[in-house]
Length: 108
Image (cartoon, rainbow, N blue to C red):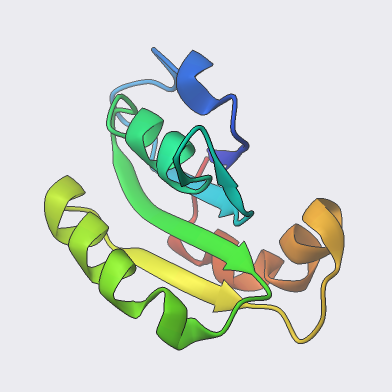
């Protein structure tokens, strides 16, 4: 199962069965409510059973996310990877451009 999460990801609960692999894809945006916008859906991902990977998709430089990605990955004990777009493509474009990589773990 692939979950494309946005800032409203707090609503994600009880998704998937106990055997399904789940991959979360989070589109990276600017700050909101005093925290990096990306923090809200990542926090919600803690509730997803069988989460095997989190992908952050955006147009920011990778070095801007390196420390954060490492910290979140250690906190959740799930691999987190930042995927930098060559230019801003919007949510659907980002998902489309990285579709093969996102589906690599064969999520249901």
